[in-house]
Image (cartoon, rainbow, N blue to C red; front, side):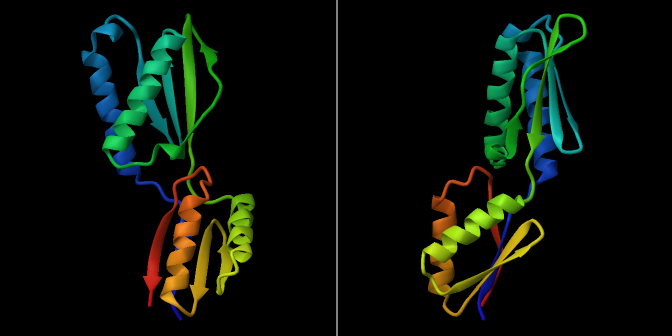
Length: 161
C-alpha cells in the first residue's frame, strides 16, 4: 500500500551557514560600522543583539535573505518580541520551529478527511503518515497540504509504492 510521511525538519548545518554568512555581511556593511551587533544560535533559537530597532529590522531581512540562499524555509523562524538588553542594546529572539504540533496535525487531518480522498492519516508524535491505495490520491494530498498554507515548512519523505 503506497504511503508517505509529512514532517517538518530543519537542516541545522545550513542554518549555521546562513548565520555565519549574515554575520560576515554585518562586519563588512557600512551602516553597521561601529555597532556591536551579534547573531548567535542556541539549541532551537537564534538571538540577535544590536543597538536599535532599525538595525534589528535590517538583521531580520539579512537572516531571511541568507536562509533563502541556503534553501532553508524562512517560515521556520518565529519572531518574538523585542526586549531590552544591558547597556542601551536591543535583543531579538527567534524560535526555530521543528516538528508539527498536535493542533496542526489535527487540522491537517481534518482538511484531508474533508477532501473525501480515500486515504488514511495517522499521527505519529510530531509527524503524519498518510496511506492510500492509489499514488494519485497521495499526490493530491501532497498538493492539498502545500496549498493549505499552514505556516510551517513541511517535507514529504519515505514515499513508498
